[in-house]
Image (cartoon, rainbow, N blue to C red; front, top):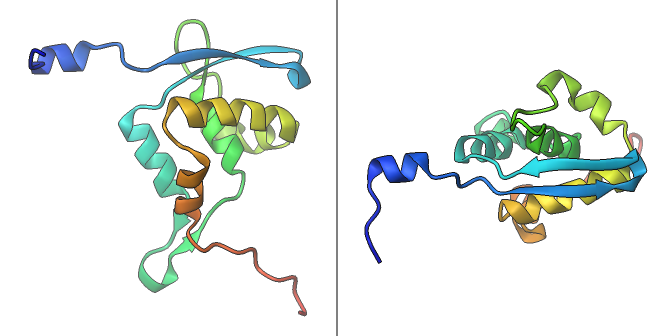
Length: 128
């Protein structure tokens, strides 16, 4: 197997794409794999604070990842960061369907998401 050079690596079209039927939304969406920088930023967004103040941030996790990966036919992102909250208000089944494909395309298996979460347990209700 030949060794790849800089130009070959940087010009390789290496982000997979897949069309995902989402009946809950009445059609299909096109998703793509994340870049290394996007995946790192997503994983970093799963935590807030530093050191002893470091806490998990799994609020709207599915919507945040889905917003990164849904693209139009021209390859540009459909959703901006400002759309994440509204996207999180959509059908959980629809988000899950798209989220699962994005996980697969990016090697983010269930176990990987659990590893990000660590020993995360929801806070008990106030007063308990």
